[in-house]
Amino acid sequence: MQAGMDVFFLLIGASMVLAMHAGFAFLEAGTVRRKNQVNALSKILCDLGISTVAYFLVGYAVAYGVTFLVPASELTGTTEGGAFGANGIDLVRFFFLLMFAAAIPAIISGGIAERARFMPQLVATGILVGLVYPFFEGIVWGGRFGLQDRIEATFGAPFHDFAGSVVVHGVGGWLALGAVVLLGVRRDRYTVTGQLLAVPPSNIPYLALGSWILCVGWFGFNVMSSQSVETASGLVAMNSLMAMAGGLLVATVVGRKDPGFIHNGALAGLVAVCAGSDVMHPLGALFTGGIAGALFIWGFNKCQRDWKIDDVLGVWPLHGMCGIAGGVLAGVFGQTALGGLGGVSLGAQVVGSVAGMAYAGVMGFVVYGALKATMGIRLTPEDEFRGADIAVHQVPAYPEEEMIH
Image 1 (tube, helix red, strand yellow):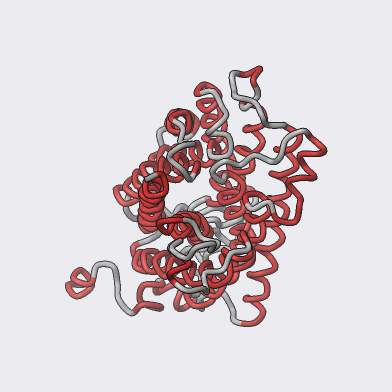
Image 2 (image 1 turned 60 degrees about the horizontal axis):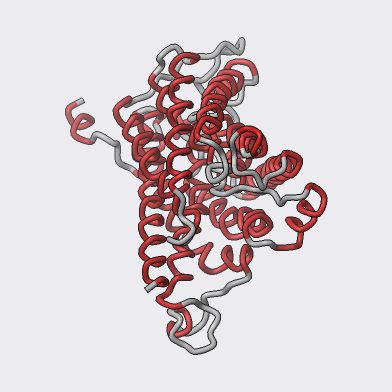
């Protein structure tokens, strides 16, 4: 009965996180121009397919030392003395963790939108989900290579990342930085003197829908990270809610009621609270979300205006910066002195967060640099002007309108 309940529990969580990929897709489709909406929707779905195969064949084994290339009777736990749990619990655990892994290319997709080639990005997805992401995932969540033991011996507690502020979002955001920089800016984003040109979102309702889907799915992302009914905690749900509220409210004020900042501010709060959602007091989660909401807007504006980094959806500030901040803040608001449950060390949180940032930052440039040198990763100027919908998929998002015109 316990195994069956855990299977059902994780299956619900995995399905909720699967739905988040629709959120990623609509958030991107609503932000990019109409001529790139089909590409946004298609790219994220195909990335999910590549991620599934890569994580099944390679990635899960890299992270946890487990292979699924055994008879089905062993996979479902019916073989006596087998390595897999009853009722196929390990299979739905794979499904759940796969959805985390597949978030990596979904995050990157938003940063490289409107000028990235389709097939090289699928190759990058296979490499990132099969090798790059699972290596760090295994260190933090799989106890691989003994690094967590060393951190605990040094600081009195291991690096704590309950639901992936650093492991998923931080790594995804810092990998995206390399891809965005190596791709370069869109052809019509800046004038010859470097002045920023406005590119308004194509569809605010799509953008809002994407944010809403992500917000709802995030409660599966966070709460079900306990991976069992017995250890599930309502505190995680409460803290997720408070961080979401903190992020969107601060973003509303700091972003001067801009709808893009409002909807992404909610996501910034959720990104940041993942790491410490199981140990913070709800007020700590509220402050964490608020800090992340302000950090996202600062980072987004700096990227676009000052640093000339053309990150279309702001995935480096949203996931990279806010993810790392969330890892560190778990070591602050998780302390018993601030109402948290304790068991975390600020030193360990800083070390783990910086390690994730450094690893992903380097690997983003390595992977996309190699692909740029061998396959090429950017559309031609002509294809970029026409839009990826026509150039890659040979169909516009609104074919009836095209026929009329």
